Amino acid sequence: MTTPITKVVFPVAGLGTRFLPATKAIAKEMLPVADQPLIQYAVQEALEAGIEEFIFVTNPTNERILKAHFEANEDLEATLAERGKTAELKVVTETTLADNQVKFCYQDQPLGLGHAVWCAREFVAHEPFAVILPDDLIMAAPGCLKQMMDAHTKYGGNVVAVEDVPRELTNRYGILDVDQDDGKVASAKGLVEKPAPEEAPSTLSIIGRYILDAQVFAHLDKKMTGAGGEIQLTDAIAATIGDVAFHGLRFDGQRFDCGSMNGFVEANVAFGLKRSNHPDELRSVLKNHI
Ligand code: G1P
Image 1 (tube, protein in one colour):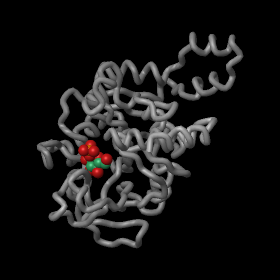
Image 2 (cartoon, rainbow, N blue to C red; image 1 turned 60 degrees about the vertical axis):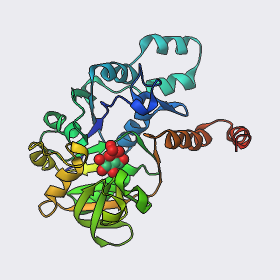
Image 3 (spheres, rainbow, N blue to C red; image 1 turned 30 degrees about the horizontal axis):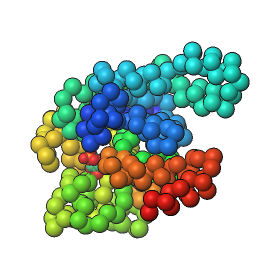
């Protein structure tokens, strides 16, 4: 029997420098893809997977805007109700999370993803937990984290989402040193953060979804730096291989790298076509640009 996973950590302290000036006054995670901010997709994916507690690792500026998004906005709700805008009212009320479901902690220095997750350790305590990087937006049904929860029920331990990437891109990802691979689930004997293409042990890369055993904190506590001089989550997970089961799941779905301009625009096209009330009209205007 595996312990149910009820907590998710969102590392959202970044400055979003690649999206300046859009991110001058708002967190990168508040940028909309079609009609929803990125963070909203991440929360919905977590809710679908059974998550009950949402831990944002952030900074005071981003906290304010994230809080405002997830708490009730009574004035707006009253106005929408008055105007009979029931569909819009439903959309707005569905974004509200209860106060006791939402936790904030700060990462005051950009010391790496491992450090960001470590900052959430007191809220996570000793339970297994999920991590979602909202920049990695995944279109999938069921959602990627739900697929991973099912794998976790089967295998326990650490489960990460993985995807094969072109070899020339291995230096952007955590890469598995594969042990066994049945084409859907792979186990690994090691993990390497952002290896050069010629040094990468495989092309199977970690995408921003993790289910982790709290043992990773024992390694993150040591504050050891790795690739790029940062405290890497990949290194902490790698250090538990042998003690904790490790599996990489090739999820069913499409991932968009919303940390890059092209990935973000592609996501807007894909989610726009899916969420628009007039997708044919959108398809036809898009054709004018290609
Ligand atoms: C992080 C992780 C990396 C992972 C990637 C997925 O890198 O360190 O292992 O493959 O997310 O998006 P980052 O994109 O933050 O540099």
